[in-house]
Image (cartoon, rainbow, N blue to C red; front, side):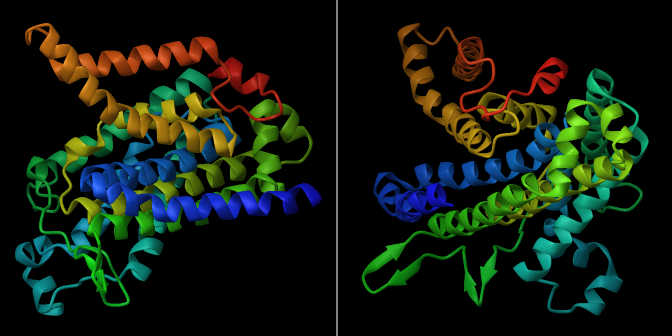
Length: 361
């Protein structure tokens, strides 16, 4: 308790720095604040996947499917697509649905959790590579499903995606408009950043409590040795389903926030590479360790944007013979390989070794 008391000033200083960071970044351009806001969403995704991969030891390569579920749920509830497609919906809600955030977040979490449980049911007996292949297939099925669900009834608008999505609003304040405090203007993207930061803080507290609860200890027992955990009386079936459902709920909430932030969603935003990137964030930062997962998500969310400028300079040096996008991906891959060679347990691993998980992943 004493050590925790000593850390409170550090926590408060960090919280204050995170709150004022976008204010300073506004002067450099809204693009940098946008990178910070998207990094918060990636942290949400990484925290959710860490429950499945880090705590329960279940390798999930289809996590982006839950991200898509939350995004399309909000897009359908907050865009005119359903009202233009179905006459019954337009008659029932002549002014539009315009779902508030207090309804969106629980619904996105619940629907994604249901999808996670449905994924978990048929794969309860799978481990390691077999589980990874099945979850990878699930993620691709959801993407293809969204890409083709425009015939015979147009629900997702297919590859064209859904646009004209309502921005998020809080207590009548639309986050799509700048906030004026006297002569000082707070950009719209900064308001979104603060909303995402609040969700990240709540998620970190929830994950911390889960990690140190009986449920968290049961997950870790399953991760290290499922047979031994079952012999000790742990209901491994229910614990695995709970891990899938809780982890998926984080992805659903992040997806709903992404749809409101972007104002447009399409199946291309939820490709396999997104799932691999989120897995890389968890592994790079330190599997099962909350500070490490957050660090990995921040680095991999910001690294592509930073390398965008470096790749452009290198392309100019070669006379344009190297494509900048391909070069950027190459630099990201080289950076990740170098980090994993130097720090195989992650940049910020937990205090306790995790041999069982390391062997399986």
